[in-house]
Image 1 (tube, rainbow, N blue to C red):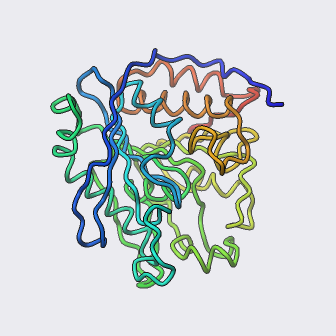
Image 2 (tube, one colour):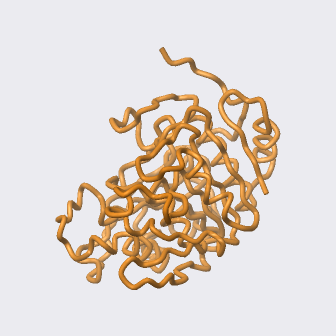
Image 3 (cartoon, one colour):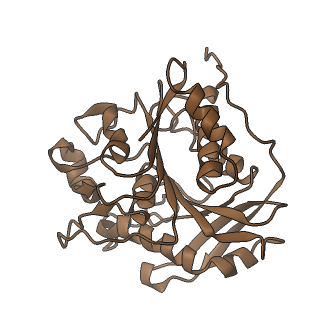
Length: 312
């Protein structure tokens, strides 16, 4: 039986939202059209944007616990279905497979290029979005995608080069349960099947960011254990914060979907913690309000049952 705990955090009341999907962007270079979902508040102006990248195999319908929460509290959340999605189901020998990590970044940049027509595709949204306040967020593989947009360098396993693929339109990032550095810390499975993890350089990330890591997230990709997913915090520079979710496994209590089958640590209290801290961070970093973020830092400084929040 799961014991529900309260975070001790509060926030603004939710408001009604509108969702539009699928919005189709032609994308010949990726081999098929890019499908996009947008969730937004029905009211409000100068709404900031969260550009969210799903984990490996998921799609634009995933992560409702986060997407619904952010949208109902004042953010326009944009999701795409990337080529690694089970919905796309590209073949094992598809020539695009070694480049999945790069196609994801291109998907995000395509969305940023098309913000105005995407905005116009949602009833009543035109003219209410602030294109100058954009935060990239993502879970697992999507966390790498978000990181690349703010300066993470990934060595291309085919060319051996680590290009700067960051985008100045993105002001900050939220990386949830995301891979750490590669090298000899990768398992043979990860080295062979996820070559884009072999060499990651976090030192060029200077934009503000929040990293969320579960202290029980023992992935079969690394020999280091759960501490590996804290690397995006410990190895990057600048204004960063780390939320450690106690007892959290890879899906942090169930952020990928309500009653999602892949969740191994289903826990509404953990999900509520992630919801509230990420929202407080979004409101803080986009300049809406700093009160909830300061409260989170105070409440989660130490001796909290659900987690700990560190900053540097």
